[in-house]
Length: 195
Image 1 (cartoon, rainbow, N blue to C red):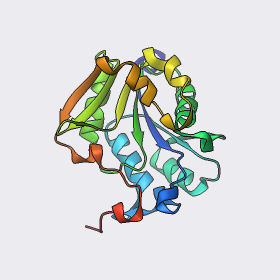
Image 2 (image 1 turned 45 degrees about the horizontal axis):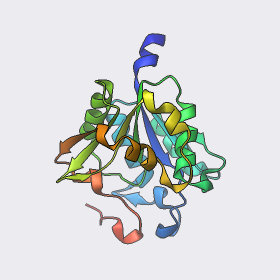
Image 3 (image 1 turned 180 degrees about the horizontal axis):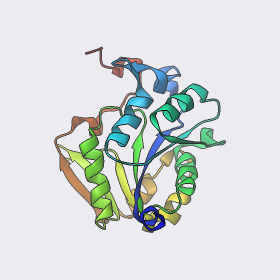
Image 4 (image 1 turned 135 degrees about the vertical axis):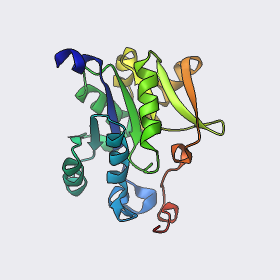
């Protein structure tokens, strides 16, 4: 078991944003009857990943819903300082992983098969992996544990962009027919009507 733990790819769900452009409460807003943040988590779980979500203080209802799904949740006390801080926090919380697939909780349409593919590419040795839909790089992004120290140093709103930029030539892009990799929800008008 310990050996398996050393070599697994962990799923990370970044769920600590304020959702200010949405007007607050974005990750609890329903999409086809399920909270946006929960739907994003379910996609990662369906891909077979052990998922850890990072949330901001006061996210009690989101934490409760994610726990019901089987997601480990960690609270980043200074999440207001930006996505990079939240990412560094959750990377530290998931030490021992061979790599990570990092997804944004406001991207609820990514297919589990896409997430699994990115995990497999990292597992097979890629430093960074990401899907590309019609040539546009999307999410989630996979990172090898070789980048752990760089991810732990992330700050501000940049998230992992600086790490990706530094290793741009080493990104393994995976052509994808999944439009969910570039679909995110920023404002209420981005929420598709119920199906």
